[in-house]
Length: 253
Length: 131
Image 1 (cartoon, rainbow over the protein chains, first blue to last red):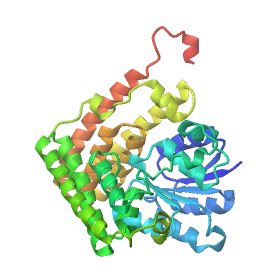
Image 2: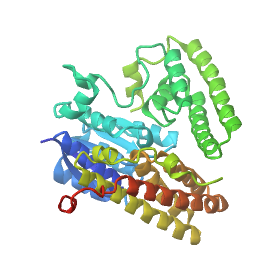
Image 3: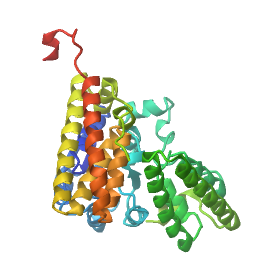
């Protein structure tokens, strides 16, 4: 039986995923802080790690670094599963060698399970696979963090991404966001401020929603549309030198 | 700003949802809901004591935890409030935290009542099946 090591101090999250993963035929071990997680790594020899970033004792980013520093764990799939809204932190996780980066608030439990199953080879996922696509190759059907068509042109990918962001269907710290903004050929000088801007807009929309401020919400969406135009122009101008899907997801590592 | 209504804060208040989330039985769904309510209540208590002691980093930490579990459990309205107070606490905006925390307490109380009511054992169910 494949083993998933969950390193997370939130009992609600670990309880949910223990049940979900058991239903997929996977064994789960839990580390409730970074220090314990590192010790359990050697003890249970997991096939994949689901790693929170904000952890007591040793934080998740350091756990990730320590895992990658060990030759025997160089290829161990580590899926960062965080509630962080800082684009820099999400980028840092890619940089330190995360296999995937998922955001707690905009990734469904089913998609987290799919990402874990995919990371360990997709052999033990009848329930999750069937839920997505009852075809012969279910695991290719629904990548957890991909919400845009990577075969589309970069400009179109960004346009779709921004539409989904405006509709509240994707968060600024999600995998696609970081991939397209950081590796999408927009340039570092452009990408970093854009990621910050989107995170700020997210807060503004949340506050506007709370305050039932229709005009403020409209203003936020107008801002997103304006940014979308700039992105389209920038990406369009740079087209040809932009991302190939595989190269981009690897370029951050 | 007013507290969210319980129905706005927790759109999914039925036992089916919690059972599916727990991948088990009605009982495991109830246990998960109780765990969510207990843990979130405890984290809110930490936020209250953190605010009283001027330790906004403690507030931020507890809010971060609650935002994650509330979002995962579909209590999206509360998750947004927790995220908001997390930002306020990280910026050490004590007054903003002091304004938002009562909203969270009020909203959470409403959510708790709504969720517990929604998953209550039906009165017609035989006693032995409840045990």
